[in-house]
Image 1: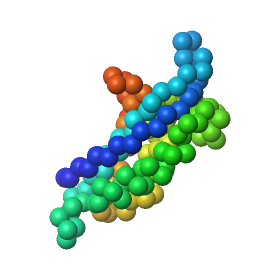
Image 2: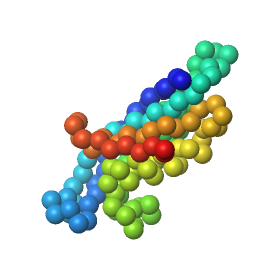
Image 3: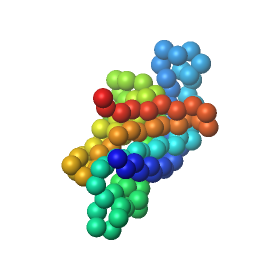
Length: 122
């Protein structure tokens, strides 16, 4: 099994309801990592072009950059936690990659240098 990893960053503000300290408006410089996996390399000797993956990931993450996350439709009924951000990105990325060639195995969202959450399917 081959595994690829690509990362991009974005800055955004949010409030996490029901968590006293985080209920106040605050921001993070988020880092998003996507992990893709597959079993077969193409003729060129790679699973997928890193530039292509980064372009797709950047396009998806750009919707969050410099936004108040609580106002986005994805987070109107749920907290914009790192866990939920990771799941939203994961679900959106799945449609870009043909599962018979390469699949999204995990999305990890860092909200600081020492704290991250990830989402992957069973």
